[in-house]
Image (tube, rainbow, N blue to C red; front, side):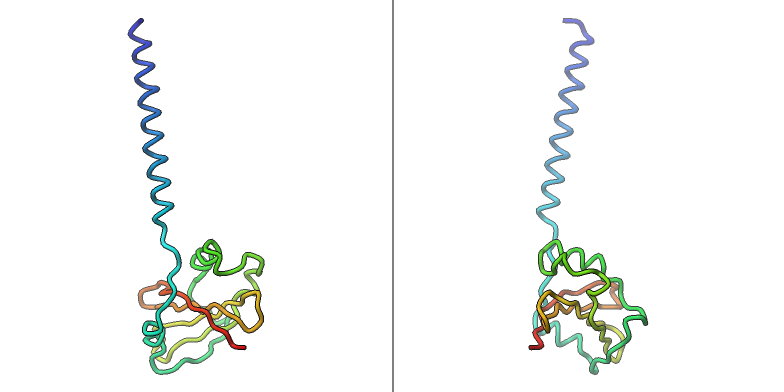
Length: 132
């Protein structure tokens, strides 16, 4: 065989090996993706420093939409609820460090509460709230 055939086979083999390595790492990172975290009672209680006050939804609150997408992907929130109807109420503690955002579910008086640390600019986790 000519040299160009060996060269062609080498490039094809290199392409296949590189593709398999990429596929392996893609599958591995998808499996290691963190699911939204259910808050412990201790962590939740530590976010209620100084009491909570309701703020208007139009006042602006933490951008939770990436976290909402994670909750929907984990099937904690239903995809059937429109995003415009999703945020029910927003509460902020007196030191303005934490926000509690109530998200509507398909059941009446059942909510998913997302706790946000405004200083760290991230959602700490969620918990279920039954007001019935």
